[in-house]
Length: 148
Image (tube, rainbow, N blue to C red):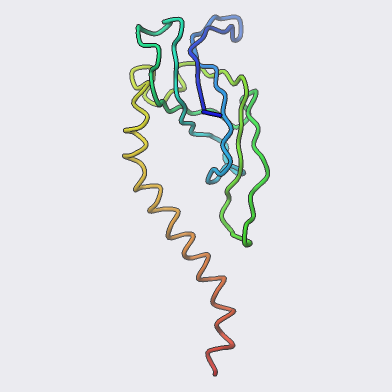
């Protein structure tokens, strides 16, 4: 299943809003089990032309709170007793207003560039912490071998 968002109208708290109806299923998301705010990348479509003439808008990024209706966060993966918090996340018929897009409607379709710009930052955080956890796990095992 491709992670998709379709521009639509929905009444929220008595007001009609233009937003995106999201559907996704991601299996291995860093920090998903403990996240309070979720950053979501999805392919955005506007079949009814509600925000412009382009129908296939492209990869777009949005932010949504963990407790948004339709969001389901699964149990933490625990392969090889890894200490890092990774897990599945999925959503069906999740509505977010356009104001929850990163950069607003003006940045819709520019998600691929935004993701590439952030890739190095994310790796600079996760790789050292994972290496540190691995070193801590190996150290007690190596201690008895040191005397030989």
